Picture 1 (spheres, helix red, strand yellow):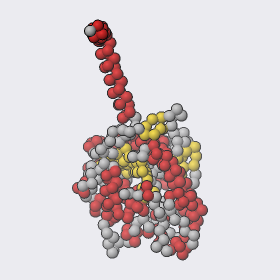
Picture 2 (cartoon, helix red, strand yellow; picture 1 turned 45 degrees about the vertical axis):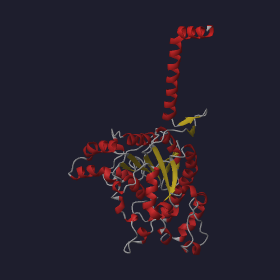
Picture 3 (cartoon, helix red, strand yellow; picture 1 turned 30 degrees about the vertical axis):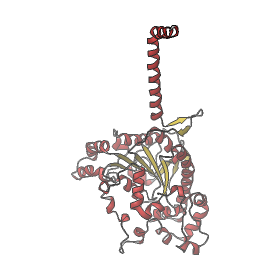
Picture 4 (cartoon, helix red, strand yellow; picture 1 turned 90 degrees about the horizontal axis):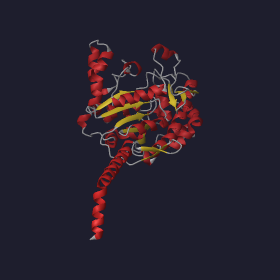
Length: 400
């Protein structure tokens, strides 16, 4: 009884202290849980991004498609962005950086030739080519590029029309989310008025926000993923020879001479190799939110591969959400009247790219071929033998 009385006296005397302690412990615990969810990655003593912590499962994701000019990104971007429940922004960095890309945190490189220079992240990078001067495009910096991406995913569009929206390009390729804006512009209303009248609402009402980005190396995507827990990145690879062939076939791309073609190949393969190696690091940090895919794999069975990607991104697979996409020729069996290019978008380059170009690219791109699984052709007979596959896609990169 004495022990019981002593315990009772103790709790009576210190009940308020114990109550305060209990409440404080509960508050601290809840705060730590919030921090754990709000900060999906940690930093080590060196300030580097650490392994991803377990977080709650997010049902719907926003998407950043990262790739290369003429790398199959237009079709892939349409599949992901031209949905009724999606806001899609086509190339948000195009207007401030047409022929350059940001290579890491302090380098800017040309996409049409192997030429890089050190530039501070906050410093603008004017494109000095004649083509860009004709467009009178504004200059941009890495800081501005990241801010434009942040504004897109946050649906914040102040001063956005000047640095991102290209009136003749962005609405045209933006898919269903730009329907009202395009209709408004048909009535000769200023595009800035049409943009502000419709786009902020369309963005906020969408379930997913999708961007197609061609001007960032993969290491620059880690901080973007870190800051946005509901974002997934898909990096799209395509055979560099197919990309070069497509650039040759494209009127507006500067690849008119053999020298320009080889310079293109040098720049492209330099970036692809860097993207693959740095992307593997990003993938380790964000194993559930960063993945590589190959256009050669995606284009073989676009309908079923698209549905797999939709599931990965938390997108509804009901076809009512993408009726316009289903009308694309890529989703249908190739009709007899279609060109070879449309029938076989991923591999048609082997019938049109000159062997001399393939041979010259061998030395330039051999490391890319080796690491990404693309076939090196030792002679023209081997190259012309279409029964020999041009790629063996790593199992972990297959859309399955």
